[in-house]
Image (tube, rainbow, N blue to C red; front, top):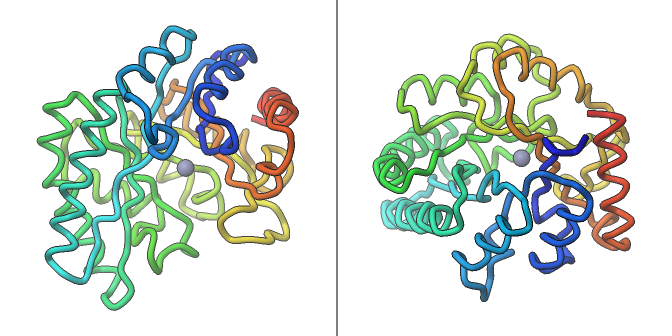
Length: 268
Ligand code: ZN
């Protein structure tokens, strides 16, 4: 029932990854997407082994990107950093790195998008060598100042088509794209380039622009409708729950985990 369910480690941020692995597996969850900070101070290959031995599939490594910078040194450093992220994903055994592409205050979004394309093209050969794919995750436009100059699935599709590399695709996160009037057409346009599907909900009102994501069913996102669209486009992968929530991080994470599984069954 929950075998296609995957949790991002940040969703249960208070838990060390070892606790998360055991709890997810015990709950019958099939996948785990590992955030970089969850591996602090640990052997990456050992952690990957531990995840697989628990019976979980490693779905993605989160996250690379942030290619845009005012100075050339900053852009070069971002490319080096992304190669390290790709190396870490390969060491962990993750097939995919999710990209939050970046933006820089002080230059146009068009310029940031040019830099993002250049950065992605610079790291793609490394990704191919390591057997790791990259997924561009368009972010909600409220993050266009510093997090992502790519704010629609249309822009992500345009970039993926322009670069035309079979190791590059998109991550569709309902939180970022649900409002888009072109969503259905752009999901259809993705076809088999959808590499990841992230779910949570948009609380109304939202109390914090970063850390107030809702459980599925708590907000206004038509999650089932969007799921049907991505599956119609050919996506058959894991459904990843990615919730940043000060409120949920403050509660007993075992109780929260039960609520996630329940929300997945009833609202996804
Ligand atoms: Zn996401």
